[in-house]
Image (tube, rainbow, N blue to C red; front, side):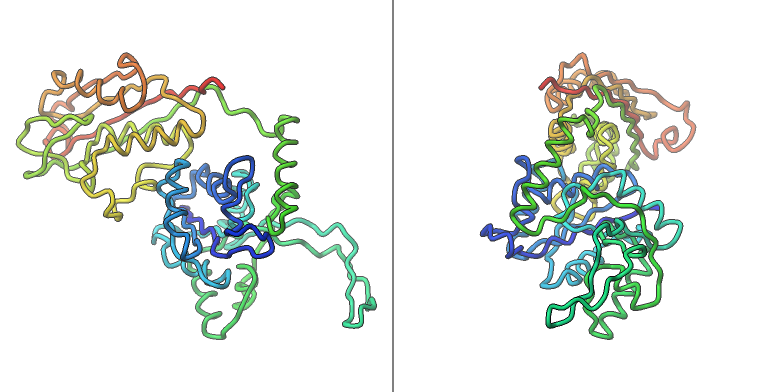
Amino acid sequence: MKAAAIIPAGGIGKRMALGAPKQFAELAGIPLLVHTVRAFAQVAEISAIIVAAPKDYLRHTGELMARYGLPGVKVVAGGELRQDSVQAGLAQVPPECGLVAVHDGARPLITPALIRACLVAAQQTGAAMAAIPVKDTIKEVAADHFIVRTIDRKTLWQAQTPQVVRTDILRRAFAAAEEKSFIGTDEASFLELINERMSVVQGSEENIKITRPGDLLIAEAILMQKEQTGAQPAAPALRIGHGYDAHRLVAGRPLILGGVEIPHATGLLGHSDADVLTHALCDAILGALGAGDLGRHFPDTDPAYKNISSLKLLARVMDAAKEQGYSLGNADITVVAQAPKLAPYFPAMREKLAAVCCADQSAINLKGTTTEKMGFAGRQEGIAAHAVVLLQRQAD
């Protein structure tokens, strides 16, 4: 089941006393919010990421996402309350997403493994959240500061995020909350309002929320400890990805493949320049990175990408690869087209693609094939392309 992630980050974090919202504070040289979003971008089941940011920081947030190789993240204006931010994000969840994962923007140490565990549990039960058992002895204290009683901690858990809920249930819960003017602190409290149950997934002591200046020091210490102990496995030296794309041939459009315009009676239909070869290459690179597909990063509903050169999209995808420490080892691309003959144009394509990928031209292999007049390609209704890439870890 496809899922969307909503990252409420609309607060200003007064307790941090930073002069700017805490989600933009740096942890190990990278903004907290970027750490958070990166974890969700690595989960294949997450097909849409929506960040609810302070209204005065919308442009800044969008620029951050682009700078750190996360251009497909949708940024919306958050609200005064956490639930206002979540509701703003919920309005942007694509209809195909059956689950919604809500995660605090200031919990930067969340791991893809914990996100997946919550998604799996929610798919089985309808709703699930990360939480950890309470370890300390809990006292109920009266207004005069005298202890009333000791509370049995055996059934007490400390709530964390992500909290994953079936989309239809979450929408129903928010509608009920609006009708009753209910204010909740997390998604579980909204489900309680409509008598829906939420299961619990064992969370992590490291999945802390940054609320005070000292929390940043704790988070830094956790990251340093992971590096020293090797708790975070080193990124693999090689990554392989496969990409596929197909576009319809229509009259009145230029035929562009590999960034080269090819004389032909028909061209490819698409929101961008519909360069199916370059799209397949982009998808293969994103696949190798575990970063979803081209549509997630450059949706065809965004006017910014109308008729854009796919080479520009490829450049942004390569920026994302470099951000994760990878360069292109080689790419093998096959174009499936009955016509025109593409071999004469391959050298120019190879030159353009290699330049964008910062690779030697010998690393780009291009092939063309027909389907012996079978299928949509054989009937000249469209053109398809397959790409396989090998990414290699860059030397430190």
